[in-house]
Structures are given as C-alpha cells and as structure tokens.
Amino acid sequence: MIEIKKRLLNITAAIHDAEKKTQRTPNTVQLLAVSKTWPAEIVQQAVDAGQYHFGENYLQEALTKINALSGSNIVWHFIGPIQSNKTKDIAQNFDWVQSVDRFKIAQRLSNQRPENLAKLNICIQVNIDNEISKSGVSAVNLLPLAEQISQLDHIQLRGLMIIPTKTDDHQQQQLSFQKARLLFDQLATIYPNIDTLSMGMSADMAIAISQGSTMVRIGTGLFGQRGALNH
Ligand SMILES: *Cc1c(COP(=O)(O)O)cnc(C)c1O
Image (cartoon, rainbow, N blue to C red):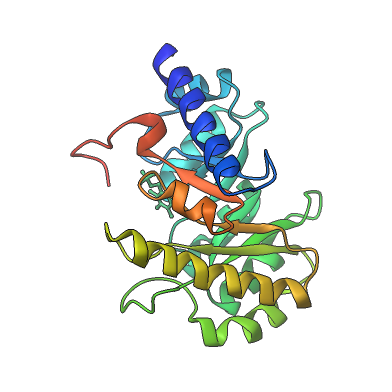
C-alpha cells in the first residue's frame, strides 16, 4: 500500500518535473495507470492512493477486475488489440478505447454502446514508425479513418495513441513522438474538440511529455516489474 502510494507520488512528481522543464502548462499531462496482470486488490491500493484512470490490455482479465471494483469511480481504458468478437464487452464495460485502428471495430463499438451510457471515448492508434506486424493505422490512412469514426453516433473521438519502436535511442524516440505530435496537430485543425495525445510509457515518459503528450501510460513504473507469468 505504502509502496504504491510512494511510487504514485514519485511518478506524479516526475510528470510535473517534465512539464516544467519543457514549458508545458502544469497539470496538463494525465497519468493512466496500466494495471494489466495485476489483481483487483492492487488496483484498489492505487485507487486508495488517489489514482482513478486505469488501462487494461486483456479483456477477460479486465472484466474480472471491473466487476470486483464496481462502485468505485474508476475510469477504465482499453489499450490492447481488439478482435471483433470482443467489441460488445468492451463497449459495455469501458469508458475509453485507445487501440482503435479499423473502422469496422469503431462501428461495432458504436452500435454496441449501451444507450444509457455516455459516448465511448476513442483514440485512434497510429503505427507511427510503420512497423510490420504492429497494430495501428498508418499515418497516411489516419485522416480518412478519423473522418469515418467522427460520424459514429455513440463514439467521441478524443485523439491518438501511439507506441513507438522499442529502442534506447533517445533521438529516435523523440522523432517518433514528434511525428505523432504533428499528426495530432493536423487532426486538431479538423476536429478542434480532440484533446488527447496518448504517448509515453515507463521508459520514455519524459521525452514523450517534452514532445506534447497529454497522457502517459505507466505500468512497471507504478506497479513494479510484471512477473514471468505475466505478459
Ligand atoms: C503495457 C503497456 C503500457 C505500460 O508499459 P510500461 O512499460 O509497463 O509502463 C503502456 N501502453 C500499452 C499499450 C501497454 O500495452
């Protein structure tokens, strides 16, 4: 408990530090706690420490936690790959989906979003470094996809999510984030209501913030190393 609270304070301080260093307005970068592989009790500890946005990659695992923690004020983000047969459960149980890269998936999510819930918040995942076998729409196909998604009734387009190539090369990381920022700005001229550029994980958070991230997705930095059994 004390451990997670301490880590949460450390990460929040590091976010503020990165905002300050790069002349970002304070408190404009949101923390998404990535709780994949960690049980509900651990999520509850983070909630008790003041965190309420959580990201999950695996549907069945997430549903168990969402049920166990129902009644809390958690905002759940789905951030993993999406198969068509999973869209109904996602539309019914999540507040955000950050990993949309095909119109068919967005359309199903919209159609399956319960009427009594707020619109489902969507980020389009962009394959920013054009990696083979990585999820995400390519940059050249982003605008047509956004145009289609923006017309769906039960979807609110919020912005972009990117996962750059895994590398320790800071310059390359910076370039990937810069490309994403340019795309985001371009999209924002067409959809002035978008507000979310989801980029930066435990290892590259500060660089992502320096390039305009508005949401960092932190797993290991908050909860610790995922174990051998974990994904
Ligand atoms: C696992 C995961 C994260 C968190 O990664 P860490 O390196 O543990 O901070 C962020 N985003 C996505 C999409 C993930 O799958």
